[in-house]
Image 1: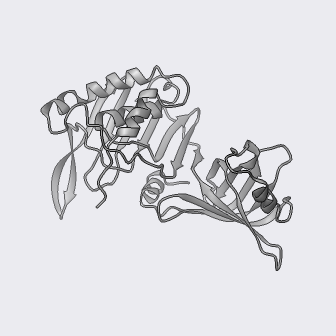
Image 2 (image 1 turned 90 degrees about the horizontal axis):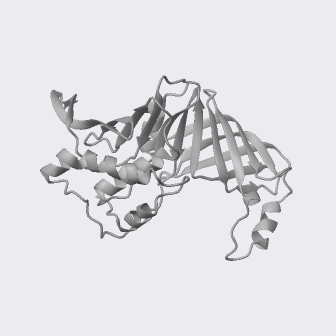
Image 3 (image 1 turned 90 degrees about the vertical axis):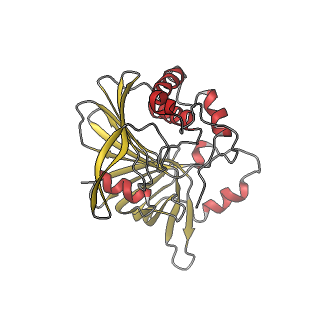
Length: 297
């Protein structure tokens, strides 16, 4: 069985490595190309998810990808059939899927063997772990400065100590448990609800976090209850804004930030929950464009 915490931690450190006993890459059109074999899913140095299939069976035209490449026109968007869907089964029998993958096949002209490889923007594992409540966990892989008011016992340099690293509150009908431990490289939002979450609730939480911190915010790992399953989705890094013009609505150095920060978070979350569909609220695009970036050291 998949160890969720271990998998997320390895992914955060860009060392995720999944050996797959079966991988299938299928073109997004009826009767399209199909590649099958064993392989792996790993991470590049920058954290991007990559895959490779040692193809044992396929129905592709020999060097057909070269014809498609030379036939492409500059400025023309890729059609849906230019992409592939990936399904992979790890050696622990965990099933992973990824949609709209761009294929980069390699044909060996000496023996006609094929390697299928490429990048994955996001992939999902399907876990048979029913939950009593609706459950959502978002990992942001950055340490945000937030109004934390709960302490946890920990050990530092061999000594027991207490750190203010958590916050608990209710917002928009859900219970939030937020964790940011110094040195963890992660900010975690764990959310519970007795009723189903609104559509794209993860994006709305992301937008509210971006608003109160004035920093870009993209979750990189999402754990969510879906019916009788628990789905784990991992995403490759996103491009970030380089502009630094927006400041937090409440200064993190102010006592008002600790006293009213989560109230402001809830107000903004309530506002963006009115957004239709699964796209960002228009205000979020403006904040993303002007949000501050963490200083790389």
